[in-house]
Length: 245
Image (cartoon, rainbow, N blue to C red):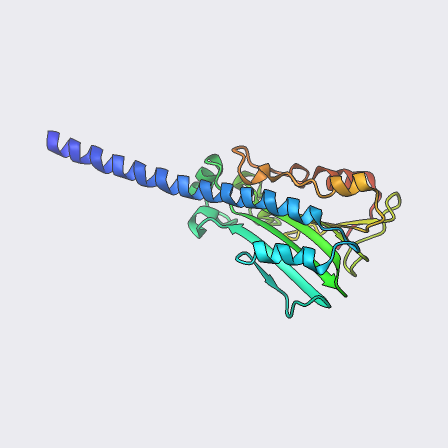
């Protein structure tokens, strides 16, 4: 009997160590994304649209080459470059929104501060000069924030913001009080996007690139885009924007 108990204790200890190792590895990976994202955000902010040159952009390509890739050819005449940092939980820890699914493991992952996260950034160059720069953060929502089964399922919080030499076609509606800024709420997995021009007030530009990366690692999960980029949500709430479809 004693030998059986000792064996059981050893098995339980081994299982606990395996679980601890798996948690530590996953949580460390989230921190690794956050550390890299902090450096990436700082370097993207340092680019100035219509002022920085291709050589400035090349320094990011050199440093972040293992995480990035150009969209097509990348030369001083024309270049679009994207950088992606991702940490994704295995499917059994992500869960499903179907009726009758209890999602025990995903709920446990929520309580252990484990979540899928992604940080993306990029820039474009035209005729040797930086024409745009942008940064995006995405974190998975906890199971408790998914909403009722069968309803609209939005698994992540996602928000992006960037400076552009001119608004893109999908930038969103005009802003009555911010002529050099457009914000669009996609009401879905694409989240919220913000685009501002170089003429925008410098303090507003800073606020619109002030991403809170704590959502990647904090124990209490973020539940709103305002936890990631407060200024974008503040403007959305104060502006009489028409519904976006």
